[in-house]
Length: 142
Image (cartoon, rainbow, N blue to C red; front, side, top):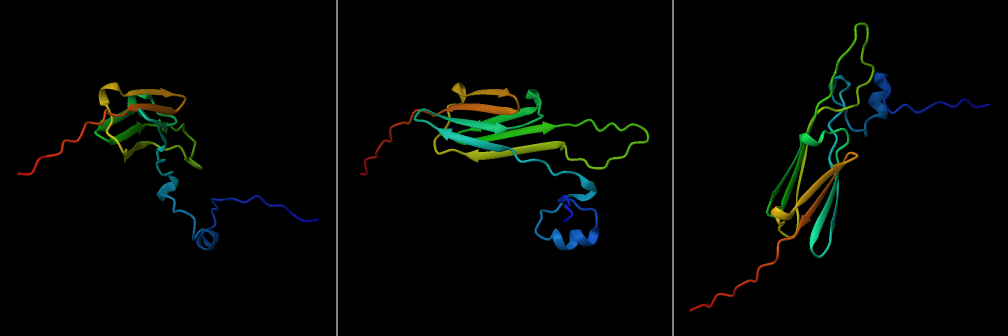
């Protein structure tokens, strides 16, 4: 009969970590988890862009969205209470705290006055209407 063992992606043995973890991303000092990236989905229709950004565990008041022409910037601040009771010690801490941001540009400029944002269940939804394309004027060369 064979013995089954569970794979541990975070072994505590240094030699095992040296050889098996060569291609695994480095972890921060002290076991702190790195800040998560803001993952976004961007879709486009004829009249608008729709952006869905994952921001789990963030309060609505801590989210900041800026629009400048065709540049969209999303930033958020996450604070975690790290109270410890006497006699406790941290074995693993994976919940992140800090600030994250993401910026990207779109193909068309956005009409900031008609843009709308909604935050529900950890997902920020942005509706970004496109600006009406202005006609290009051809200059007469004298």
